[in-house]
Amino acid sequence: EPEVTQTPSHQVTQMGQEVILRCVPISNHLYFYWYRQILGQKVEFLVSFYNNEISEKSEIFDDQFSVERPDGSNFTLKIRSTKLEDSAMYFCASSGDYSNQPQHFGDGTRLSIL
Amino acid sequence: EDKVVQSPLSLVVHEGDTVTLNCSYEVTNFRSLLWYKQEKKAPTFLFMLTSSGIEKKSGRLSSILDKKELFSILNITATQTGDSAVYLCAVVRGATNKLIFGTGTLLAVQP
Image (tube, rainbow over the protein chains, first blue to last red):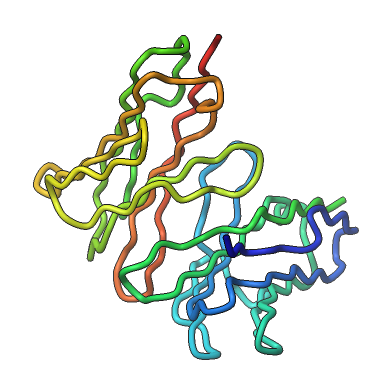
């Protein structure tokens, strides 16, 4: 069964550095998302992306964050000037159809900021 | 403010028991409600519910949505240790298909 793949599985970075989290969505999907889950808290929406542009972003998704689909397969989340509070599990998800298909999630990248 | 509330927060049962997990919501521009199972990593899709009163079934799992009372339940019959996980309820909201998650129910099934 097709799946969403994320790399790396774990990223450890010094505060202030930039990180890029990578995702390969399911190949025929058109809608892409990033969520994060701080340890012990709810999964939170960050951003949705369709047709090479952001559809919606949350209050969390400020100028520190950006997303890109650099080619036909990858979907990346860049976090600049990382802070301690950026430590979380970051999930990528994709769905094929706007309203009729569920979002499928990758295994996540655990980001640890030191 | 949009809200998805799950209960109980955690539950311990024995193999063979039947469990019912609850999810209530207050979300503007509701489109659908999804249930996911989260073990160590990715939330794994279980059900998508769009219409009231239509039960979705998959093996020992079933779920139903009540759009008038704004809640859904997930039933698991004849539980097994492999059912131990966090069960997440999420509501699809509005124009951009954003998911709003509840806190999850941690289910532990003891042998």
